[in-house]
Length: 537
Image 1 (spheres, rainbow, N blue to C red):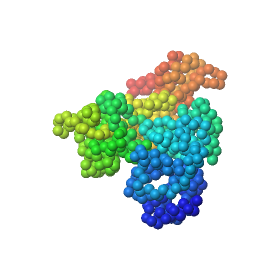
Image 2 (cartoon, rainbow, N blue to C red):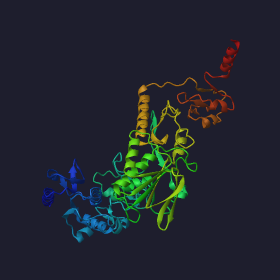
Image 3 (tube, rainbow, N blue to C red):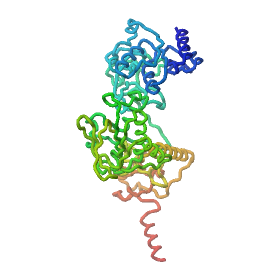
Image 4 (cartoon, rainbow, N blue to C red):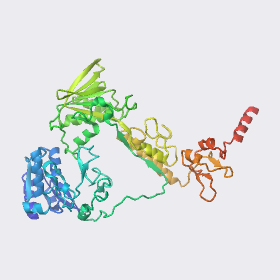
Protein backbone atom coordinates (compact mmCIF):
# COMPACT_ATOMS: atom_id res chain seq x y z
CA UNK A 1 0.00 0.00 0.00
CA UNK A 2 2.74 2.45 0.93
CA UNK A 3 4.62 1.78 -2.33
CA UNK A 4 1.46 2.48 -4.34
CA UNK A 5 0.86 5.76 -2.50
CA UNK A 6 4.46 6.92 -3.03
CA UNK A 7 4.29 5.98 -6.73
CA UNK A 8 1.04 7.92 -7.19
CA UNK A 9 2.39 10.96 -5.30
CA UNK A 10 5.60 10.90 -7.37
CA UNK A 11 3.54 10.87 -10.57
CA UNK A 12 1.59 13.92 -9.43
CA UNK A 13 4.79 15.88 -8.70
CA UNK A 14 6.25 14.90 -12.07
CA UNK A 15 3.07 16.10 -13.80
CA UNK A 16 3.55 19.59 -12.36
CA UNK A 17 1.56 19.41 -9.14
CA UNK A 18 2.71 22.09 -6.65
CA UNK A 19 2.81 19.67 -3.71
CA UNK A 20 1.33 16.64 -2.00
CA UNK A 21 -0.17 16.91 1.48
CA UNK A 22 0.50 13.91 3.68
CA UNK A 23 2.17 12.72 6.88
CA UNK A 24 5.93 12.81 7.31
CA UNK A 25 7.89 10.89 9.92
CA UNK A 26 11.04 12.64 11.08
CA UNK A 27 13.01 12.14 14.30
CA UNK A 28 10.34 9.84 15.68
CA UNK A 29 7.47 12.32 15.20
CA UNK A 30 4.67 12.18 12.65
CA UNK A 31 2.79 15.25 11.46
CA UNK A 32 1.25 16.90 8.38
CA UNK A 33 3.72 18.01 5.70
CA UNK A 34 3.59 19.44 2.18
CA UNK A 35 5.85 17.30 -0.02
CA UNK A 36 7.25 19.31 -2.92
CA UNK A 37 10.17 17.06 -3.86
CA UNK A 38 10.07 13.41 -4.96
CA UNK A 39 13.09 12.59 -2.78
CA UNK A 40 11.12 13.63 0.32
CA UNK A 41 8.43 11.01 -0.30
CA UNK A 42 10.58 8.32 1.31
CA UNK A 43 9.52 9.84 4.63
CA UNK A 44 5.80 9.52 3.79
CA UNK A 45 3.93 7.78 6.63
CA UNK A 46 0.43 6.35 6.98
CA UNK A 47 0.49 5.71 10.73
CA UNK A 48 -0.47 6.90 13.23
CA UNK A 49 -3.84 8.00 11.88
CA UNK A 50 -3.92 11.79 11.81
CA UNK A 51 -6.64 14.21 10.55
CA UNK A 52 -5.65 16.22 7.47
CA UNK A 53 -8.90 18.02 6.61
CA UNK A 54 -8.04 21.13 8.63
CA UNK A 55 -4.54 21.32 7.11
CA UNK A 56 -5.94 21.03 3.58
CA UNK A 57 -8.46 23.84 4.16
CA UNK A 58 -5.79 26.15 5.58
CA UNK A 59 -3.45 25.54 2.64
CA UNK A 60 -6.25 26.13 0.14
CA UNK A 61 -7.22 29.38 1.87
CA UNK A 62 -3.64 30.61 1.77
CA UNK A 63 -2.76 29.47 -1.79
CA UNK A 64 -6.04 29.10 -3.70
CA UNK A 65 -4.21 29.04 -7.04
CA UNK A 66 -2.01 26.03 -6.18
CA UNK A 67 -2.58 22.51 -7.53
CA UNK A 68 -2.19 20.06 -4.67
CA UNK A 69 -2.42 16.35 -4.06
CA UNK A 70 -3.44 14.81 -0.75
CA UNK A 71 -3.05 11.37 0.85
CA UNK A 72 -6.55 10.93 2.29
CA UNK A 73 -8.17 8.32 4.48
CA UNK A 74 -11.85 7.55 4.30
CA UNK A 75 -12.61 9.74 7.30
CA UNK A 76 -10.73 12.67 5.70
CA UNK A 77 -12.76 12.23 2.52
CA UNK A 78 -16.02 12.27 4.50
CA UNK A 79 -14.90 15.35 6.42
CA UNK A 80 -14.01 17.22 3.22
CA UNK A 81 -17.35 16.25 1.69
CA UNK A 82 -19.17 17.83 4.64
CA UNK A 83 -16.96 20.92 4.42
CA UNK A 84 -17.64 21.19 0.69
CA UNK A 85 -21.37 21.21 1.43
CA UNK A 86 -20.81 24.08 3.86
CA UNK A 87 -18.69 26.03 1.36
CA UNK A 88 -15.54 25.85 3.50
CA UNK A 89 -13.67 23.59 1.07
CA UNK A 90 -13.57 23.35 -2.74
CA UNK A 91 -12.63 20.16 -4.53
CA UNK A 92 -11.15 21.98 -7.55
CA UNK A 93 -7.37 21.99 -7.48
CA UNK A 94 -7.03 19.00 -5.12
CA UNK A 95 -6.19 15.51 -6.36
CA UNK A 96 -6.90 12.85 -3.69
CA UNK A 97 -4.73 9.78 -3.28
CA UNK A 98 -7.12 7.48 -1.45
CA UNK A 99 -6.50 5.16 1.47
CA UNK A 100 -10.03 3.78 1.23
CA UNK A 101 -11.92 2.24 4.12
CA UNK A 102 -15.37 0.72 3.98
CA UNK A 103 -18.42 1.86 5.92
CA UNK A 104 -18.06 -1.18 8.17
CA UNK A 105 -14.46 -0.25 8.95
CA UNK A 106 -15.55 3.34 9.66
CA UNK A 107 -18.17 2.16 12.11
CA UNK A 108 -15.69 -0.20 13.76
CA UNK A 109 -13.10 2.53 14.33
CA UNK A 110 -15.80 4.90 15.62
CA UNK A 111 -15.08 7.70 13.13
CA UNK A 112 -18.76 7.93 12.18
CA UNK A 113 -19.98 8.47 15.72
CA UNK A 114 -20.62 11.96 17.16
CA UNK A 115 -18.22 11.65 20.07
CA UNK A 116 -19.67 14.55 22.00
CA UNK A 117 -22.13 11.99 23.42
CA UNK A 118 -19.80 8.96 23.44
CA UNK A 119 -18.05 9.26 26.78
CA UNK A 120 -16.62 5.73 26.71
CA UNK A 121 -14.74 6.30 23.43
CA UNK A 122 -10.98 5.68 23.65
CA UNK A 123 -10.51 7.25 20.22
CA UNK A 124 -8.20 6.68 17.30
CA UNK A 125 -7.12 10.29 16.54
CA UNK A 126 -9.29 10.62 13.47
CA UNK A 127 -12.89 10.66 14.65
CA UNK A 128 -15.15 13.50 13.47
CA UNK A 129 -16.60 15.56 16.25
CA UNK A 130 -19.88 16.66 14.75
CA UNK A 131 -20.05 15.76 11.07
CA UNK A 132 -23.06 17.84 10.09
CA UNK A 133 -21.68 21.18 11.27
CA UNK A 134 -18.06 20.88 12.36
CA UNK A 135 -16.37 18.18 10.34
CA UNK A 136 -13.14 20.18 10.35
CA UNK A 137 -12.86 19.91 14.12
CA UNK A 138 -11.38 16.50 14.76
CA UNK A 139 -11.32 14.56 17.99
CA UNK A 140 -8.28 14.10 20.17
CA UNK A 141 -10.36 11.46 22.04
CA UNK A 142 -11.67 14.08 24.47
CA UNK A 143 -15.49 14.40 24.27
CA UNK A 144 -15.69 17.87 25.86
CA UNK A 145 -15.89 20.92 23.58
CA UNK A 146 -15.73 24.46 25.03
CA UNK A 147 -15.14 27.94 23.55
CA UNK A 148 -11.50 28.65 22.77
CA UNK A 149 -10.23 31.65 24.77
CA UNK A 150 -7.32 32.19 22.40
CA UNK A 151 -9.78 32.51 19.50
CA UNK A 152 -11.76 35.08 21.52
CA UNK A 153 -14.57 32.55 21.85
CA UNK A 154 -15.05 32.38 18.06
CA UNK A 155 -13.68 28.84 17.82
CA UNK A 156 -13.75 25.75 20.01
CA UNK A 157 -11.25 23.55 21.77
CA UNK A 158 -11.22 20.35 23.78
CA UNK A 159 -10.64 19.90 27.51
CA UNK A 160 -7.16 18.61 26.61
CA UNK A 161 -5.50 21.07 24.27
CA UNK A 162 -2.47 23.15 23.30
CA UNK A 163 -3.14 26.69 24.61
CA UNK A 164 -2.13 28.32 21.32
CA UNK A 165 0.11 27.77 18.32
CA UNK A 166 3.83 27.98 19.12
CA UNK A 167 3.12 27.65 22.87
CA UNK A 168 6.20 27.17 25.03
CA UNK A 169 6.43 24.38 26.01
CA UNK A 170 4.55 22.98 23.00
CA UNK A 171 2.69 20.35 25.01
CA UNK A 172 -0.94 19.50 25.69
CA UNK A 173 -2.57 20.54 28.95
CA UNK A 174 -5.81 19.52 30.64
CA UNK A 175 -8.45 22.07 31.59
CA UNK A 176 -9.28 21.46 35.28
CA UNK A 177 -12.64 23.23 34.92
CA UNK A 178 -13.97 21.02 32.11
CA UNK A 179 -11.99 17.75 32.07
CA UNK A 180 -14.36 14.94 33.07
CA UNK A 181 -11.59 13.19 34.99
CA UNK A 182 -10.33 16.21 36.90
CA UNK A 183 -13.83 17.45 37.76
CA UNK A 184 -14.73 13.88 38.85
CA UNK A 185 -17.87 13.86 36.69
CA UNK A 186 -16.78 10.70 34.93
CA UNK A 187 -13.86 8.29 35.11
CA UNK A 188 -12.82 9.25 31.56
CA UNK A 189 -9.48 7.81 30.41
CA UNK A 190 -9.63 8.60 26.70
CA UNK A 191 -6.46 10.65 26.47
CA UNK A 192 -4.69 8.37 28.95
CA UNK A 193 -5.47 5.26 26.91
CA UNK A 194 -4.26 6.56 23.54
CA UNK A 195 -1.11 8.37 24.67
CA UNK A 196 1.78 6.28 23.33
CA UNK A 197 4.28 8.16 25.50
CA UNK A 198 2.14 7.52 28.62
CA UNK A 199 2.58 11.16 29.56
CA UNK A 200 -1.03 11.64 30.69
CA UNK A 201 -1.20 10.79 34.37
CA UNK A 202 -4.16 8.73 35.54
CA UNK A 203 -4.42 10.83 38.68
CA UNK A 204 -3.40 14.39 37.92
CA UNK A 205 -4.14 16.96 40.62
CA UNK A 206 -2.85 20.46 41.22
CA UNK A 207 -0.16 20.74 43.87
CA UNK A 208 1.34 23.75 45.61
CA UNK A 209 5.05 24.10 46.15
CA UNK A 210 7.03 26.67 48.10
CA UNK A 211 10.17 27.77 46.25
CA UNK A 212 12.79 30.10 47.65
CA UNK A 213 14.02 32.58 45.04
CA UNK A 214 16.37 35.52 44.95
CA UNK A 215 14.32 37.70 42.61
CA UNK A 216 10.88 37.83 41.03
CA UNK A 217 10.10 39.25 37.58
CA UNK A 218 6.42 40.17 37.33
CA UNK A 219 5.22 40.05 33.72
CA UNK A 220 1.50 39.41 34.00
CA UNK A 221 0.57 41.23 30.79
CA UNK A 222 -2.64 43.12 30.15
CA UNK A 223 -6.27 42.82 29.11
CA UNK A 224 -8.15 44.70 26.41
CA UNK A 225 -10.98 47.13 27.09
CA UNK A 226 -14.36 45.41 27.14
CA UNK A 227 -16.34 47.07 24.33
CA UNK A 228 -19.83 46.52 25.90
CA UNK A 229 -18.87 49.08 28.56
CA UNK A 230 -19.46 51.73 25.86
CA UNK A 231 -23.08 51.00 24.83
CA UNK A 232 -23.11 53.56 22.01
CA UNK A 233 -21.17 51.11 19.83
CA UNK A 234 -23.79 48.34 20.31
CA UNK A 235 -21.14 45.63 20.45
CA UNK A 236 -22.81 42.26 20.97
CA UNK A 237 -26.22 43.66 20.03
CA UNK A 238 -25.84 43.97 16.26
CA UNK A 239 -23.97 41.49 14.04
CA UNK A 240 -20.70 42.36 12.30
CA UNK A 241 -19.45 44.64 15.08
CA UNK A 242 -16.23 43.06 16.37
CA UNK A 243 -13.27 43.93 18.57
CA UNK A 244 -9.77 44.23 17.15
CA UNK A 245 -8.55 40.94 18.66
CA UNK A 246 -11.52 39.10 17.17
CA UNK A 247 -10.49 40.45 13.78
CA UNK A 248 -6.95 39.16 14.36
CA UNK A 249 -8.21 35.63 14.95
CA UNK A 250 -10.52 35.75 11.93
CA UNK A 251 -7.60 36.72 9.70
CA UNK A 252 -5.20 34.15 11.12
CA UNK A 253 -4.58 30.98 9.13
CA UNK A 254 -4.75 29.06 12.43
CA UNK A 255 -7.96 30.82 13.46
CA UNK A 256 -11.53 29.50 13.53
CA UNK A 257 -12.18 30.34 9.84
CA UNK A 258 -8.79 29.24 8.52
CA UNK A 259 -7.92 32.81 7.58
CA UNK A 260 -11.06 33.38 5.50
CA UNK A 261 -12.35 36.87 6.35
CA UNK A 262 -16.13 36.95 5.97
CA UNK A 263 -19.15 38.50 7.66
CA UNK A 264 -21.54 36.66 9.97
CA UNK A 265 -23.73 35.70 6.98
CA UNK A 266 -20.79 34.46 4.90
CA UNK A 267 -20.51 37.51 2.62
CA UNK A 268 -17.21 39.24 1.90
CA UNK A 269 -17.39 42.84 3.25
CA UNK A 270 -17.28 45.70 0.75
CA UNK A 271 -16.86 48.51 3.30
CA UNK A 272 -15.26 48.48 6.75
CA UNK A 273 -15.03 51.15 9.45
CA UNK A 274 -12.27 50.99 12.08
CA UNK A 275 -12.92 53.13 15.16
CA UNK A 276 -9.80 54.18 17.10
CA UNK A 277 -9.44 54.84 20.82
CA UNK A 278 -12.29 52.62 22.05
CA UNK A 279 -11.71 52.73 25.79
CA UNK A 280 -8.70 55.06 25.55
CA UNK A 281 -8.40 58.85 25.72
CA UNK A 282 -11.99 58.92 26.89
CA UNK A 283 -13.23 60.53 30.09
CA UNK A 284 -16.02 57.92 30.18
CA UNK A 285 -13.56 55.02 30.09
CA UNK A 286 -9.75 55.44 30.39
CA UNK A 287 -8.08 58.81 30.01
CA UNK A 288 -4.64 57.46 29.03
CA UNK A 289 -3.43 56.60 25.52
CA UNK A 290 -2.94 52.87 24.90
CA UNK A 291 -0.07 53.65 22.51
CA UNK A 292 -0.54 50.63 20.22
CA UNK A 293 -4.05 51.22 18.85
CA UNK A 294 -3.15 53.50 15.92
CA UNK A 295 -0.62 51.13 14.37
CA UNK A 296 -2.77 48.12 15.24
CA UNK A 297 -5.71 49.66 13.37
CA UNK A 298 -3.51 50.53 10.36
CA UNK A 299 -2.22 46.96 10.17
CA UNK A 300 -5.79 45.68 10.22
CA UNK A 301 -6.78 48.14 7.47
CA UNK A 302 -3.90 46.80 5.40
CA UNK A 303 -5.12 43.20 5.98
CA UNK A 304 -8.67 44.10 4.96
CA UNK A 305 -7.37 45.65 1.74
CA UNK A 306 -5.17 42.64 1.09
CA UNK A 307 -7.87 40.01 1.70
CA UNK A 308 -11.01 41.72 0.36
CA UNK A 309 -10.17 45.00 -1.38
CA UNK A 310 -13.00 46.64 0.58
CA UNK A 311 -13.20 50.39 1.21
CA UNK A 312 -11.78 51.08 4.67
CA UNK A 313 -12.52 54.13 6.82
CA UNK A 314 -10.37 54.90 9.87
CA UNK A 315 -11.99 57.20 12.42
CA UNK A 316 -9.25 58.55 14.66
CA UNK A 317 -8.63 61.18 17.31
CA UNK A 318 -4.93 61.72 16.58
CA UNK A 319 -2.55 59.45 14.71
CA UNK A 320 0.39 58.51 16.91
CA UNK A 321 3.05 56.73 14.87
CA UNK A 322 6.24 57.30 16.85
CA UNK A 323 8.11 54.00 16.38
CA UNK A 324 10.74 53.04 13.85
CA UNK A 325 9.16 52.76 10.42
CA UNK A 326 5.70 53.60 11.77
CA UNK A 327 5.28 56.88 9.88
CA UNK A 328 6.33 55.17 6.66
CA UNK A 329 3.71 52.47 7.19
CA UNK A 330 1.10 55.18 7.85
CA UNK A 331 1.90 56.69 4.45
CA UNK A 332 1.83 53.26 2.79
CA UNK A 333 -1.67 52.53 4.10
CA UNK A 334 -2.85 55.89 2.79
CA UNK A 335 -1.47 55.04 -0.65
CA UNK A 336 -3.40 51.75 -0.53
CA UNK A 337 -6.63 53.75 -0.45
CA UNK A 338 -7.55 53.71 3.24
CA UNK A 339 -9.54 56.85 4.04
CA UNK A 340 -8.57 58.52 7.34
CA UNK A 341 -11.22 60.72 8.97
CA UNK A 342 -10.20 62.83 11.96
CA UNK A 343 -13.04 62.52 14.41
CA UNK A 344 -14.05 60.01 17.05
CA UNK A 345 -16.74 57.53 16.05
CA UNK A 346 -19.70 58.63 18.15
CA UNK A 347 -22.21 55.84 17.61
CA UNK A 348 -22.94 52.68 15.61
CA UNK A 349 -26.59 52.05 14.73
CA UNK A 350 -28.59 49.72 12.47
CA UNK A 351 -30.72 51.32 9.75
CA UNK A 352 -32.65 49.08 7.33
CA UNK A 353 -30.35 46.08 7.94
CA UNK A 354 -27.31 48.28 7.33
CA UNK A 355 -24.69 49.26 9.92
CA UNK A 356 -24.23 53.02 10.05
CA UNK A 357 -21.37 54.77 11.87
CA UNK A 358 -22.09 58.29 13.06
CA UNK A 359 -19.11 60.58 13.61
CA UNK A 360 -17.86 64.13 13.31
CA UNK A 361 -15.33 65.06 10.66
CA UNK A 362 -13.32 67.80 12.39
CA UNK A 363 -11.62 68.65 9.10
CA UNK A 364 -14.94 69.49 7.47
CA UNK A 365 -16.49 70.71 10.70
CA UNK A 366 -19.70 68.75 10.28
CA UNK A 367 -21.24 65.41 11.32
CA UNK A 368 -21.07 62.46 8.90
CA UNK A 369 -22.71 59.05 8.55
CA UNK A 370 -20.93 56.05 7.03
CA UNK A 371 -22.94 52.98 5.91
CA UNK A 372 -20.60 49.98 6.21
CA UNK A 373 -20.72 46.19 6.26
CA UNK A 374 -18.36 45.71 9.21
CA UNK A 375 -17.21 47.76 12.19
CA UNK A 376 -13.92 46.99 13.97
CA UNK A 377 -13.56 48.52 17.43
CA UNK A 378 -9.88 49.17 18.15
CA UNK A 379 -9.92 48.57 21.90
CA UNK A 380 -7.16 49.87 24.14
CA UNK A 381 -5.07 48.13 26.78
CA UNK A 382 -6.18 47.85 30.39
CA UNK A 383 -4.56 46.31 33.49
CA UNK A 384 -5.28 42.63 33.98
CA UNK A 385 -8.39 41.93 35.99
CA UNK A 386 -6.32 40.16 38.66
CA UNK A 387 -3.76 42.99 39.00
CA UNK A 388 -5.23 44.11 42.32
CA UNK A 389 -4.75 40.62 43.77
CA UNK A 390 -1.18 40.45 42.43
CA UNK A 391 -0.44 43.90 43.87
CA UNK A 392 -1.68 42.81 47.31
CA UNK A 393 0.31 39.59 47.14
CA UNK A 394 3.61 41.29 46.31
CA UNK A 395 2.86 44.65 48.00
CA UNK A 396 3.32 46.59 44.77
CA UNK A 397 1.96 50.08 44.32
CA UNK A 398 -0.43 50.70 41.41
CA UNK A 399 -0.99 53.97 39.58
CA UNK A 400 -4.41 55.59 39.27
CA UNK A 401 -5.16 53.55 36.15
CA UNK A 402 -4.32 50.22 37.81
CA UNK A 403 -0.92 49.48 36.20
CA UNK A 404 1.96 48.55 38.50
CA UNK A 405 4.02 51.54 39.62
CA UNK A 406 7.73 51.64 38.88
CA UNK A 407 10.26 52.96 41.42
CA UNK A 408 11.23 55.89 39.17
CA UNK A 409 9.87 56.64 35.67
CA UNK A 410 13.31 57.50 34.25
CA UNK A 411 16.04 56.07 36.45
CA UNK A 412 14.35 52.82 37.54
CA UNK A 413 11.56 52.10 35.04
CA UNK A 414 11.54 48.32 35.58
CA UNK A 415 12.11 48.23 39.36
CA UNK A 416 9.40 48.15 41.98
CA UNK A 417 9.80 49.81 45.35
CA UNK A 418 10.78 46.45 46.82
CA UNK A 419 14.26 45.11 46.10
CA UNK A 420 14.16 41.85 44.17
CA UNK A 421 10.78 42.57 42.55
CA UNK A 422 11.00 43.69 38.92
CA UNK A 423 8.38 44.64 36.36
CA UNK A 424 8.40 43.55 32.73
CA UNK A 425 6.16 44.48 29.81
CA UNK A 426 2.59 45.73 29.76
CA UNK A 427 1.85 45.09 33.44
CA UNK A 428 3.65 48.40 34.07
CA UNK A 429 2.19 50.48 31.19
CA UNK A 430 0.73 50.05 27.67
CA UNK A 431 3.50 49.11 25.23
CA UNK A 432 3.90 47.82 21.71
CA UNK A 433 5.89 44.65 20.97
CA UNK A 434 9.37 46.22 20.40
CA UNK A 435 9.03 48.34 23.53
CA UNK A 436 7.82 45.34 25.54
CA UNK A 437 10.73 43.18 24.40
CA UNK A 438 13.27 45.90 25.29
CA UNK A 439 11.62 46.52 28.68
CA UNK A 440 11.50 42.81 29.54
CA UNK A 441 15.12 42.27 28.45
CA UNK A 442 16.27 45.13 30.67
CA UNK A 443 14.30 43.72 33.63
CA UNK A 444 15.79 40.26 33.06
CA UNK A 445 19.28 41.80 32.94
CA UNK A 446 18.63 43.46 36.30
CA UNK A 447 17.55 40.12 37.74
CA UNK A 448 20.78 38.48 36.54
CA UNK A 449 22.81 41.40 37.86
CA UNK A 450 21.22 41.07 41.29
CA UNK A 451 21.76 37.31 41.46
CA UNK A 452 25.38 37.60 40.31
CA UNK A 453 26.43 40.09 43.01
CA UNK A 454 26.67 37.62 45.85
CA UNK A 455 26.24 40.46 48.34
CA UNK A 456 23.41 42.97 48.59
CA UNK A 457 23.93 46.54 49.76
CA UNK A 458 21.15 47.68 52.08
CA UNK A 459 20.14 51.12 53.29
CA UNK A 460 21.45 52.16 56.74
CA UNK A 461 18.12 53.79 57.63
CA UNK A 462 16.12 50.83 58.91
CA UNK A 463 13.63 50.35 61.72
CA UNK A 464 14.71 48.94 65.06
CA UNK A 465 12.40 47.44 67.71
CA UNK A 466 12.97 47.53 71.47
CA UNK A 467 11.77 44.09 72.65
CA UNK A 468 11.27 45.39 76.20
CA UNK A 469 8.62 47.87 75.05
CA UNK A 470 6.98 45.83 72.25
CA UNK A 471 3.46 44.62 73.14
CA UNK A 472 3.02 42.42 70.03
CA UNK A 473 -0.04 44.39 68.92
CA UNK A 474 0.69 43.50 65.23
CA UNK A 475 -0.04 47.04 64.01
CA UNK A 476 3.43 47.41 62.50
CA UNK A 477 3.16 44.03 60.75
CA UNK A 478 -0.15 44.97 59.15
CA UNK A 479 1.07 48.39 57.99
CA UNK A 480 4.55 47.51 56.71
CA UNK A 481 4.46 47.82 52.88
CA UNK A 482 7.58 45.65 52.47
CA UNK A 483 6.65 42.72 54.77
CA UNK A 484 9.83 43.43 56.69
CA UNK A 485 8.33 42.90 60.17
CA UNK A 486 7.25 39.59 61.68
CA UNK A 487 6.74 38.03 65.10
CA UNK A 488 9.77 36.41 66.65
CA UNK A 489 9.12 32.71 66.85
CA UNK A 490 12.05 32.01 69.17
CA UNK A 491 10.18 32.23 72.43
CA UNK A 492 9.80 35.98 72.94
CA UNK A 493 6.46 37.04 71.48
CA UNK A 494 7.67 40.35 70.08
CA UNK A 495 8.05 41.85 66.60
CA UNK A 496 11.38 41.92 64.81
CA UNK A 497 12.63 43.65 61.66
CA UNK A 498 14.29 42.03 58.66
CA UNK A 499 16.85 44.73 57.82
CA UNK A 500 17.33 43.39 54.31
CA UNK A 501 13.69 44.04 53.45
CA UNK A 502 13.23 47.24 55.47
CA UNK A 503 13.46 50.51 53.51
CA UNK A 504 13.23 52.89 56.46
CA UNK A 505 9.94 54.43 55.32
CA UNK A 506 8.97 55.22 58.93
CA UNK A 507 5.37 53.98 58.78
CA UNK A 508 5.89 51.56 61.66
CA UNK A 509 7.75 54.20 63.71
CA UNK A 510 4.82 56.61 63.48
CA UNK A 511 2.17 53.92 64.10
CA UNK A 512 3.68 52.07 67.08
CA UNK A 513 1.44 52.87 70.11
CA UNK A 514 4.15 52.06 72.67
CA UNK A 515 7.00 53.88 70.93
CA UNK A 516 8.99 50.65 70.73
CA UNK A 517 10.15 51.30 67.16
CA UNK A 518 12.80 53.82 66.18
CA UNK A 519 14.49 54.59 62.89
CA UNK A 520 18.23 53.98 62.92
CA UNK A 521 20.32 57.14 62.34
CA UNK A 522 17.10 59.16 62.37
CA UNK A 523 16.11 59.26 66.04
CA UNK A 524 14.63 62.31 67.78
CA UNK A 525 17.90 62.94 69.62
CA UNK A 526 19.89 62.94 66.37
CA UNK A 527 17.43 65.29 64.69
CA UNK A 528 17.53 67.69 67.66
CA UNK A 529 21.33 67.57 67.68
CA UNK A 530 21.39 68.53 64.02
CA UNK A 531 19.00 71.42 64.64
CA UNK A 532 21.12 72.68 67.57
CA UNK A 533 24.26 72.41 65.44
CA UNK A 534 22.68 74.54 62.71
CA UNK A 535 21.43 77.17 65.15
CA UNK A 536 24.76 77.54 67.02
CA UNK A 537 26.89 78.07 63.89
